[in-house]
Length: 497
Image 1 (tube, one colour):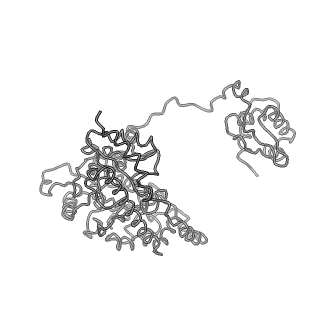
Image 2: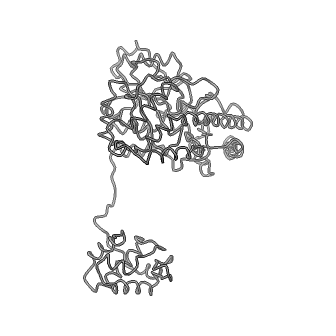
Image 3: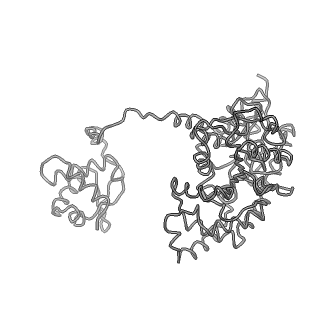
């Protein structure tokens, strides 16, 4: 039986300078240990087995092993075998010559202009879990036992189509289950043929940008708005056209005012049910205005309903897509907020005339997969577990939001909670204009508290300062203690210099 170590040593032996075979084997073993290719503490193959793999005599292997053992690289354990020592001989490491570089080394790496632009505007943090990271659900409440039972049952007899490449925009069973769920829960007009499963909302938007836009086309984006959308659009050569947001959502011009305008957007990206990050709900009048504008200008509305299930106390806000059966709206949804982000499953609902071509393009560009996961999710939805989980989490997040509001009100005052909507997974801690929210967020991170500065969501310069506080991961009884570092840090910044 071949092993990775055997393959490594055989290759290096073939490249080693001429000489006695046991000396050559000793050299490559020593070099591999020094480089870390053979980790300290790892067990080496028995001399007989390694000799058979390398097609050398056992005495050759024994001679190399014994030499390395005498120098402190290897040790034998009776009844267990030969192991690399945990502590290697320092004197040998210090005096050993550096190993020759394999191939040509790169002195620098040059990125493309768009690659540099993506990294320059990146908003992804090093840590994605903890208090008060916004947009992150409490993944510890995921009903893994139920999920595992469904997956085990399905894995015993997987259909052939779930094990091969998919050219239908995802698992048919999941598309059907989603269509039924969305018609009831989000008031969508859709059939399963219109649903395309993607590996996250970013991938869905990337597909839309590639298939519906040419480089140089414009996209209206919310100001402030989600940094991830900005980056995906920008890397596809789309001009970002920031459009201000007020308490009714994205501010729109009248249709009549567009008659003489030649620069119309190809995409209009909105979060109408819960604007990110400010939390506004787009009014019915504004929604109707948006649909009329899109129809008259030939634009596509991209509706990101990233956490539409989490509205507390009020009736759910119907999706924009459901207002008109022939609306030029592409609806984006995700399981990252309702289940867990690591699942990497999202979906989009596209108008019927577009559906077949988008699914074909998805197959060409991304090659969808994860058939077993999609089948499991379909059954999870059909059996009612998904809706039950969302209801439980909605109640949980409602209590945690109320706890954080109470803590902020008691410790700082209600003025720090201006313009809040009773929904979502975060709220905004409003700050005076003289406080640098970027510096404050960085200081809090040094103290183990994760937040996002509101000013970072503006593309054309911040008009508001604040911190996004995600409350989903903080239990109610711990809310006051968890918020205390925020209060102390903010109090220092509020004190006059």
